[in-house]
Length: 249
Ligand SMILES: O=C[C@H](O)COP(=O)(O)O
Image 1: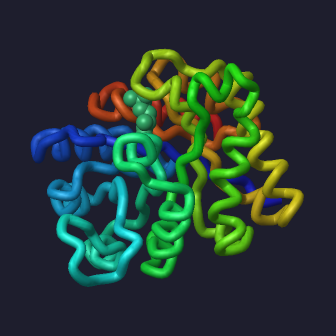
Image 2: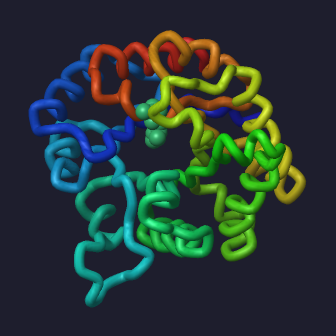
């Protein structure tokens, strides 16, 4: 059975500076995090700086188009050429603030993969959907948008991030049990289509992860690390979250 390596991804959203890139790179290097894949997702203008420090880097989004008259959009192949390895796709802020639909997100996912980027597909339910017991159907629909278009095998070179919308930036982390339940649901759903893809798939948890909550979350059998927002802007906190992943290989 293939062991899944833990991963911790820091989504800086529209925050950060050249100075923070340098501080983060120094902190991550000093911590010698050998057993965990650490990736940072700064805003586009900081990608080169971050790549030059030797950090693993990804973009927060990419265009679903390849080239042309799409002012403000960024092509995935340029992001790859710059030296990024990953891109986020379908973060809940892209879905809710910029109207990204499941079908657009599936196109971005495809475009990322055809440009050799590894997409991190973000899925998650709102508080209202959870209260209405719709968590599993919402997540199924978000996953099916990709699976139906590109096949389950497309998930082989991807990462899934489960981010309950009610936990993002709210300080309200899902309990390890709540998160594990959804991660298990995701893995079981995918296993019904392809057991090998499901077994090796990295599934991250995101939503108010900090250095106090990360250890127990990452100890859950189907939680393979975290997608961290606010705490990824503080090098000490981010490194200690990465260390807690390292202890849970
Ligand atoms: O991409 C990261 C998530 O939106 C989580 O953000 P947060 O850790 O600030 O809640």
